[in-house]
Length: 158
Image (cartoon, rainbow, N blue to C red; front, side, top):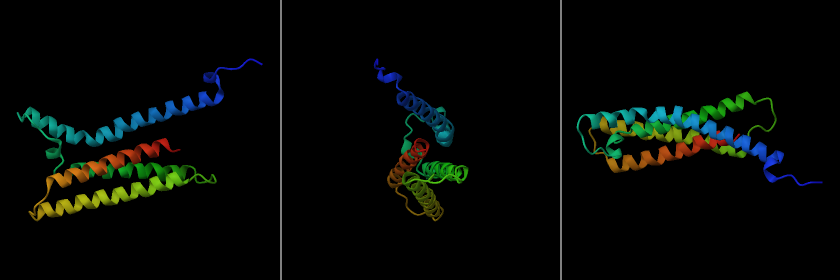
């Protein structure tokens, strides 16, 4: 019996098809969800540059918690994807694994924490309290990266 090349094996084709589908989903998510979420920040950057400001720092663009709102929106998107998947497959036994539970809890925690962090920031700004722009920037980066990873994980885990 002649040996088939590895690339023509049925499991290789299925893996290739799965990878192509997931990369397509990730690309659509990155453009439509992440891209449109950060669009207002990019537009403010563009406006500052058009206005003649030669050096615009990212930390200045998100000093009022804008990236925290983006992170909350990304976590809410991941949460809604997981919940809709649960309802779509609710009649099947064992549709919800440990990885989905971890992603669901992470999404929920990130929505709550990013929203409460933003709420606290707005309260401090309205009271004219001192705000550390570096702290806000580091917190915003953390939540943004964490929700990016969570959102991508939701897409990849199916």
